[in-house]
Image (cartoon, rainbow, N blue to C red; front, side, top):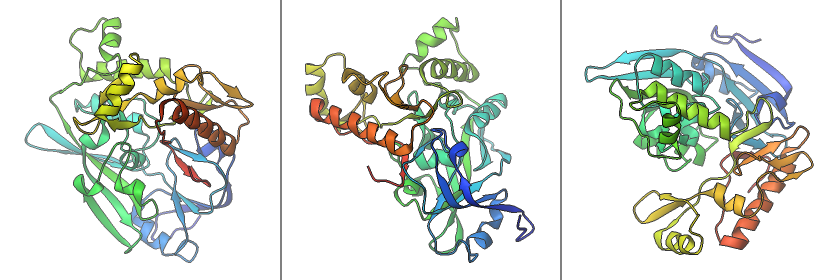
Length: 350
């Protein structure tokens, strides 16, 4: 334990990361540093042990795959403070430390009458990881509610605040993901409203609310419906290793989508990033190629959702990556559609 500026942080050499990634695959980091107060980051990262060396910021480990041991030092932020800044227009800014788990934040904001994050209930991971991946579910992306992201910029050794435009969000993408070694996300501010603007027209959400016998749902009831769907459709990482959806839904030109849909009428289509594109269901493409429920040793595909790769207990990250590549190759051969992984790959390239 080293005190630095008075805030303790813990150093662990040759750290075992198997319990720190939701795939549950083995990996050893040369150095792991846990830090509670991000104010100590500048001093910490300027230390001889970390200065000028590769760095991997690890949150809940729910959106990465260790295909090998990381060469980088690993930093984990553990702060969990939440601050509420009311505004006059019925909104509130909620400032949250990067180390807080995501789902408790959703429940915290809803319990205080703040709406917006309900469709993102039960997504695994931490608050700090949310803008990096631009997490999304049920027709909502987190960028819709991000006010600002506080970061430590390793390029110039300064603390910065990036507004939403500066984050350069895209579909499961951001400036943080495109330059992963530059920024350390330390806290996130969300702009939430006390007036619900519910989004209910995606992936069976209205049907779930109807099954709950809810005709005029509150934001909290929408979150409950999303939670019920996710628990039914997706395997629990606490019971079987996985990182949720492994592949992005491909976005293709409208003409290509129309041709595919004409040939395969059951293929679901959604609006892409513009009216000129459509988002295809990667789960449908994978399922139609026969992968749902597939198992090769301890590496497999969930029998509940074709997008989810699972570790039945003893799979390595390399084995899961090999399976993912075989799945993508089969979709490419059959549909001429390239699949891309959602999780960040450590120790390998796609």
